[in-house]
Image (cartoon, rainbow, N blue to C red; front, side, top):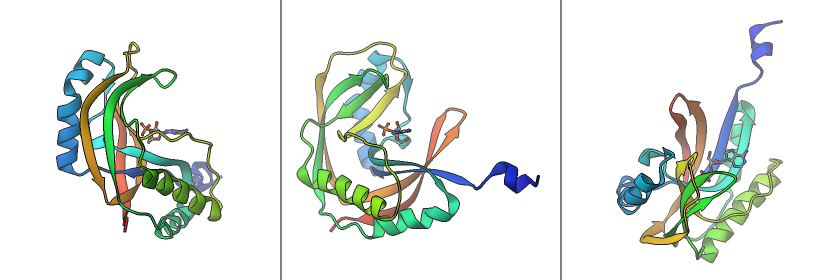
Length: 181
Ligand code: 3AM
């Protein structure tokens, strides 16, 4: 058997996300650093902070263009996202910075991404969407939900991101960004 058959086609683990700029990343760090210290567990590096919109999963190399085409067809309005709560989610054992009020335009963006991916023949898992940034994984104990300093995020685009496993956790690469207008 040849090497290429044994290795199989290259796969890309992809998801759509809101991707903060450096100033927002610093603000997220400032707003959450005390809570993260108290929580323990494995902290997510600030460079990896994001809000997942749709998790797509493993996509063969030759189908990545289809994901990009699906993104290009999405039209959605810019919106303001507020994150203002700290909560731990059992099962996933994560600590997250979340928003109680998801703006309707954010829900519409998620729906349109899902619909566009389905039109391009991508199968998606059912996912309930609640906007959040994961701060800590392998949380050692559940923490009571509480308000946190609010982050006001003016969202003007969305990103397609590739996730690869690294020795110290996930390594994310932004493959493309699309403006909201
Ligand atoms: O943005 P968060 O941290 O909520 O947990 C993974 C991360 O979510 C999630 O996709 C985001 C980027 O990696 N993820 C990973 N595997 C997943 C799966 N099989 C998954 N979400 C759903 N199903």
